[in-house]
Length: 427
View 1 (cartoon, rainbow, N blue to C red):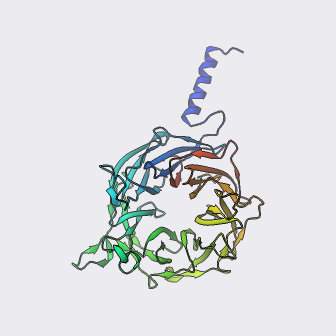
View 2: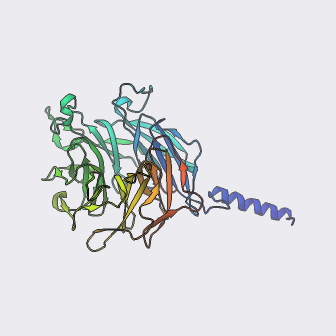
View 3: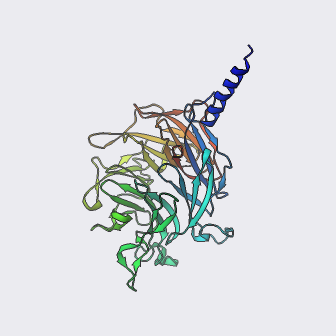
C-alpha cells in the first residue's frame, strides 16, 4: 500500500512525537529513571524504565564517573532534578585515588543534575564533616540531606580503639538543599558545642554506623553495626537533630545488616544464623515515645527456608508487603543462589507472615545489595554486587507476588554494583 505525501508526513510526525516521549512499538514510554552505582570502576549507570515491559535501556553517556572513589549510596531529590552520589573513599592504602576525586581517600558527595533523557551532568563536590560516608537520606520535603559518616571528626579509631564506641564513633552531617540549584549548605548542630564554645558541625552516632532511616513521629534512626544498636534522633525545624533520653537502643541481634521503615514500624535484618532459622531473622519494632523502639507482637520472625545472609529489606509503597534480600542459600546444590523473601504485613497487628506463593523466595542475581520500586508501582528491581547486574520483577500488588518481566529480567549494570535509586521523569 502506498501512502500519499500528506499521509507520509503525518506518519512521520506521529513517529517523531512517539520517540520524543520515549515510546516505541514494543513499549509504553519511560516512567522513570534508575541510577545504579558500581565500585569496580567508580561509576554510576543510568537507565530508562519502560512502562509496558519494565525493561531497562541505558541513557545517553552511561555509565558516567561517580566523581570519587567507592560509590555506595545515592539520593534523588523530589521531582528527580538532582542526584547525590556518596563516594565512601577508602582506608586501603594500596588503592589508587585519582587526582581530583571528590573528597579524596576519605570520601565525598558528588552532585549531579538530571537533564533531558536522564543524562547526568556533574555539578559540584561537597564534603561531609566526618570521614568515609556510607549512607545518605533526605527528609520527605527534600529540603535537607543527612549524610552518615563512619568516623566523626573527633573520633579516635586507631588500633584497639576501633572497637570502643566511646572513642570510635560515627556522625551525621546535615545539609540544607537549595531547591533551585541543588547546592548543599552545612547545618550547624544547635544542641552541642565544642570545647571552644563553637557549635558542632555534626551529630554524633554510634560505633561503625551503616544505615539511617526516617521513622514515624519525626525520628531518624541510625543502625550501628559495631555494637548492634540503634541510635535515635528526633528531627526538628531547620533540619536539627536532638537526642532523646534513650540515646542508644540495644538490639536483640547478632549481626544486624540493615534497617528499613514503614510508617511507625521498623524492620531490622539480622544475618545471625541459628539452628531454628539458618537464614537469620527479621526483627520488627514499633516506634514509641521519644523515638524508642518497642518489640512488635510476636518478636523475631524467622527468614524463609533455604535463605541465608539477609542484607537489605524494603516495603512496597502501600505498606502491605516486606521484601528481604538474601545474598546466599543453605542449599549446597545452588551455592550462588540469591533471593528475595516476601512477607505480608498484617494491617491490624503489623505481624509478618510469609507470602503464600510457591515461588517465594524469588531468585535474583548474585549478591543483591539494594531493592527499589518503580514510581508506578508495577516493578521492583535489585542491584546485584557479585555479577554486576540488575534483576527486574513484575509486581502484582493485590497479592504482593513477584514474577519475571515479559522480555527478560536481567540487565547488565556496572562492576560490583552497590545501591540503586529510582526517580520519576524529571519535573
